[in-house]
Amino acid sequence: MSTAPRAARACWPALLATTLAAALALAPPAWGAPADAPGNDVDIAKAHFGTGQAYYEHGRFADAAHEFEEAFRLSGRPALLYNMGKSYDGGNDFARALGAYRKFLAAAPPSNADRDFATQRIQRLGALVGTIRLEGAREGSSVLVDGAALGTAPLPALEVNPGRHAVEVTLDQFATVRRAVDVPVGGTAVVAVQQVEAVKVVTVAAPAPAPHDKPIWQRWWLWTAIGGAVVVAGVVTAVVLTRSDDAPPSIRLPMVQ
Image (cartoon, rainbow, N blue to C red; front, side):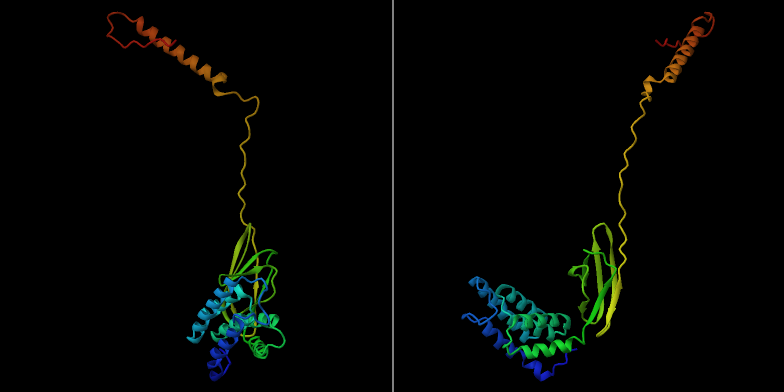
């Protein structure tokens, strides 16, 4: 839960609008804007900022954070990082708010008036989030938490909001590891990763026939059997032909050539 007083949180939209209006004014700001930023990107960033401000004022903090993030991607104004932190903070997404505030402090000049507030929130939020630590993950393994890719192993402790999270570790030729882990407030959950090598399919070629093996039509026993059958057929035919005329008619069997 956010620890900011209700009255203080109620005034955030006005502070947000003042800060971002200055950052996205047509006149170049004193800091934060890349020198080669295309003018059309700045115009689009201003549109995202306006949409984010409207979302923020209506309490749709996650949507506001997304719009401010897109505006920052296009314009590079550090003030947008501060507003991302405010939006995530308002929606009780403390882990993302913490990351946004830290990026803001790294980008904003020392004279920025919002640095004090961001510093205070970082100290407070650091005690509210938890961490996930992976042990045993093979180097280069992809790590996902709740479906979001966070990088490849080895990774430092991952800051997340308290509660249950789905951890997935994948690596080519190894079985995917999936774990459900409960992260305490201000604590650390350790995930032991044992990656088992996946089953390999091996193709075995049939051995070639030995040089002395002959085709079946060249085997001696085949022609011996056929010759025996010819002899038997000849004997049967001869017996039939040499019988007396008084014998009842019988079937003549053809000779086998």
